[in-house]
Image (tube, rainbow, N blue to C red):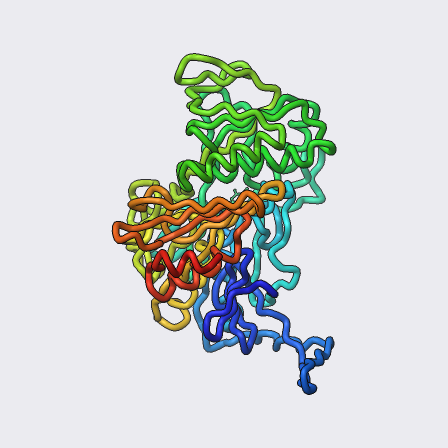
Amino acid sequence: MQKAQRNENELRCHCHGAIFDLESGAVRCAPALKPLQKYKIRMDNDSIEVDLDKLLPQSTQRDDSISENVVIIGGGAAGAAAAESLASAGAYVKVLSKESVAGPYDRTLISKRFAEVPLTKEVNENISYLSSTEVLSIDPKAKLLRVKRILPDPNKIGCGPKKKWTFEEMRYSKLIVATGMRPRYLPGQSSGITVYNSSDVERLQELVSGKRVTVVGGSYLGVETAANLVMLKKKNKLESMTLVIGEDHPLSTPYGEMIGKVVRKKLEDFGIEILSESVVEKVEDEKLIFEHGSEHSFGALIQCIGGIPVTSFLPEEVNFTGELVSVNDKFQTSCEDIYAVGDCVKIDGVSYNPHWAAAQEMGKAAATHILTGDATKLRQTMVWSSFGKVHLRSVGARADDCSSQKHYIDETSDRYITAFLNENEHVIGCVTINGDPVCAQVANLLEIHDHVRLEAFECLF
Ligand SMILES: Cc1cc2nc3c(=O)[nH]c(=O)nc-3n(C[C@H](O)[C@H](O)[C@H](O)COP(=O)(O)OP(=O)(O)OC[C@H]3O[C@@H](n4cnc5c(N)ncnc54)[C@H](O)[C@@H]3O)c2cc1C
């Protein structure tokens, strides 16, 4: 927290933008879920003595006055944050997750470390996580879920996994849908894998070893996957790495040409070949066929081309398009007592860039509405990405929703910043490479004024 940015009685972590209450250490904004540890201190003239025996937070008690039977579908960023908020207020919550992992994990680390990392080892006793549990349909009138569960079956005879499938019904009084997005695939043969969950991670290690690997996708996931796999090249013994992108430069669509060029140079320095302006039409016989007519053959293919909202199981009253679910500022859908949060929603009248911390904040806001009936104004959250020693952060508007851009290049300290400006030349968003504290300070300022004057922005670095 040494480099954290102070804003009145709050501290914003410069790395990922989490905000903590300066006095109590309580979490005020994602991505943190747990409060900062507290220690007793004693002031002695000019020095501060810290008693390293931790002051442990009080454990949460079940509050029986909260009679809601809250069920959350999805144990990702939004679902886990909603569950934590409800449970720490004393409510009892059931989280149903299709994933085989028991409890929530940090998906963002999959494309960085190619491993799942639990969000927290301390599981709140008011939360019951049901893994390998898929919601198939919802009856909103009866407030009933139809659920498929995969359970261990030690008595099963014969080969194959010792598991059984059961179908159950579950009741809810309030329901939070937090089902996120599932990966999109290129047309053609379903060759290759995506980078999304535990089974992808397992398959990935086998798939890439000793191969000419091709990653398709010029956004975060493609860039991180290509670069971080190359960083682990020794272990995985890749023969080569090619990144195929439809744009001129990786990440240039959200962040503009300057950042795109810097990212491209970094990736090329890592030994990655970049095929740009190459839109894939289909996959055929271990080859990518491009719209411009040429072909590219690969040894192993990883597809990172974005996601499709997981909403088709919802009743028509909630979502008749099968796409993003519309919600109001309290995250209520058009169906009574059904909320929706995270990557699978669009908020009425708000343009929003899906990312981890924003999904968590939505989960917390829906929980607050269930507990208190209050709407929560979403805080300014930061998007983060890292590959090799490159740390990319962004907040607020991006290239596609600004009037102009201003660039700040400092090659000596390897720091690159683009400010996104409105028609009055005020900063309404920024992206930084290796300039995390600047991004954290802009996040703080944007919470107060909606924009930052250019002179004030330039004083931040
Ligand atoms: C590999 C990877 C790396 C990423 N890295 C970053 C990063 O560095 N920074 C960042 O800001 N963002 C990152 N993101 C994006 C971020 O993870 C998402 O924005 C965030 O997870 C969205 O949260 P969510 O709760 O809406 O959905 P998810 O976290 O995807 O959770 C949805 C959950 O619902 C479950 N589910 C779906 N349907 C059902 C059903 N019918 N029944 C039961 N369960 C169901 C799914 O299995 C899943 O576990 C990354 C995404 C990926 C895939």
